[in-house]
Length: 262
Image (tube, rainbow, N blue to C red):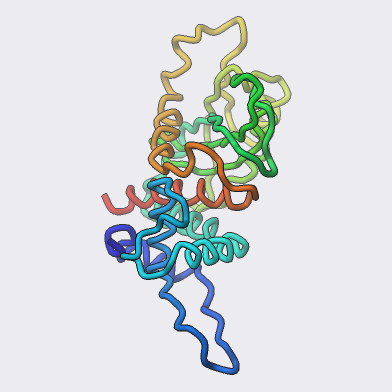
């Protein structure tokens, strides 16, 4: 089970970003569970959507131990570093196509916590929103979260700024074109993208037919469906936004890692 959830390639990348285990100066104490077993338990929770108390004993560490290590690694930004490392590996192999990128968002219910808000398309029930930019084939490049009441256009600039300088054969790259639906229709956003040498391909309200909007944007919608494979993302249970973002980063990392192993 551990080797299936954390294959050797992913484990080698994780070892490059995980901090060293703390050492008790006085010695003694319980033996610390291995990072690979704990990582497998965390990925099991992320993909199945079970609670921490439902982690099966086959992994070794208990659900409480996996949860404690998950919070520790989230605080140290281990998931963001792992995600960036996988993107760098893809970029170095020339697997990222920057010619056409797309942006979209998806809502989900949230029980409580920061970065939540009344969802205008779900009868005002509280929820959160995941914002995502993908490259041409649908691999996620930048991810962010917000309350469900944040307009999509307000999240575009932070998302574009959040695209890291991913390693590639031709040096750091940026999207050549960015496709978006009518929610991002704004003269300010178009000019802002042009100033960053990104050609905006944003549908115009009352001008363009909605039937043609998905001709280039279907890849980001497919990636949103891939994210649904991380069942922990179906509904937000985490009170702290950093933990909710960590699960989203884990899902994006697994999507990108599958491309590495093809």
